[in-house]
Length: 61
Image (cartoon, rainbow, N blue to C red; front, side, top):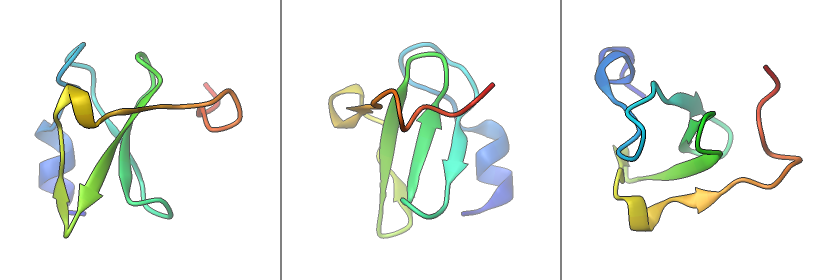
């Protein structure tokens, strides 16, 4: 994932900074507890594409 892209990309729902989850190829919003997929190297930042994270998947603060 391009580091410059990570600096400017934000959650489409709450506008918080997203965290890159490299093993699962997704971007995570810690505040909304959502994961946005990355398909073919392109983040899909549509609210309807987000997947709710389970308790076990949520990052530790």
